Length: 295
Length: 244
Image (tube, rainbow over all chains, first blue to last red; front, side, top):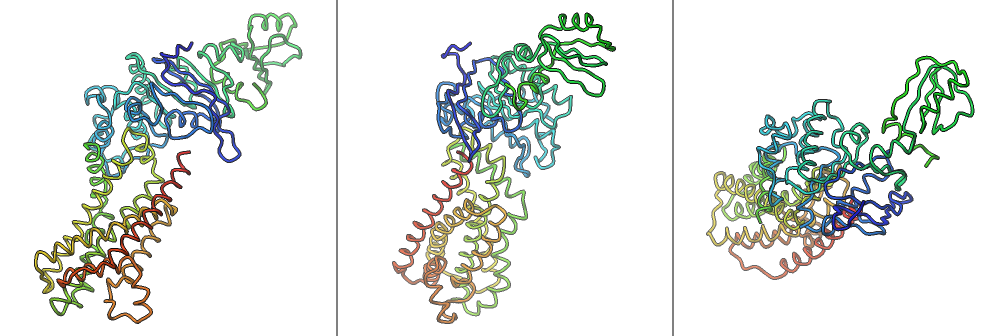
């Protein structure tokens, strides 16, 4: 998938340890222009460290980092990337418009007011001091700032944490139009729904390594593409089972071949009721891939 | 350059809208002068000397609180971490901080001088005013460097008390509240080696129309070098903790 001249960002064999913890363990990552990459993983998986190394706030112990046509700390490179802080703490006394003005001043061709406020619902907040904003409004502003400089590549760390559904949709739409204009995004998120809605490429991390990467579809396949659920008992020795649980009378089975599984259940005359078959969600794949002792 | 001005503007707007900082910084030296300075100034010369002392007190406050406490608070602020990754050189942001500190110091010293001229017999030739300001602002350089060292070295919650204690101790010990001539011998001996005392010697000479001797300047250069090294070491230590 990687033509090197098309690469927006690349980590090669990057390692990074804090004290005794190996946050990144010979980690590779490659991102093409125009792609939306979602980094998924439980807390401590190394997502934030990976983004930190890419954006130059963390120095790798080993390995090489390429960002756009240079290195993360080059000012020329930084003028082409946009970031959002994970915590949305702003100088309380500054107004929203003043914060936007300050951030835009760093970029050669920033978004106009018109374009910015069309994408992010902040127009009514321009005169408000940041200290008086709600948590959701702060998050919206933080994300808008990542796009305010009209960069080529945007890093979004947990962009919709703390947003209500409506604001999240607005943000997804803004991210979508950035992608449609050819923009590239690296996204970390806890919301699998978000990766499903936005990402063209997903990397699942655990303990500083990639445990799976691919399209949303491909990640799903790795765990079993279907989920079969029914009320009843779980017989032993079913074929093609990726994972099965039996709780409160409900049996849940992840499988690569739901048809064969259901035939087998019927063939064995398993007494099931309320049978349900559907594609596994990314969330389910994620839980499977990041479970301790698997992968 | 325009980025320096944008950061300066944002810093100033933020501080001005925080009256707990801006009003206190700007008014305290003038207010303290009303209580202490006016009672000492029973002659023109004495009044001039007290103005000189309080001008140092005002500049020292800005150096300690804006750099020391300000930096310590910024270190914990997610906004500063965000600003750290914007395409701007650390030098430009530092220049903006220096500009805003100088702005506050100018206003604080200005308020003090206006109060002093209204309430006392203080008066001196323009040349003496100019030399006083030169001494005060150059003397603030090692203080600001010490402030930076405190800001990067101390835990954020400790920075304010540390800055307060040093501020008062250096002001008192340097002879800004009590003339060194009124100090007991042991205190005068300690006072003689403090950076504030050196600035005092220069400022007092300025307002009395006396020539500057070289010793205080040498002391201040030495202190600037020492505090500059401390500031650089504490900055690197902090960078090492946060950006590794």
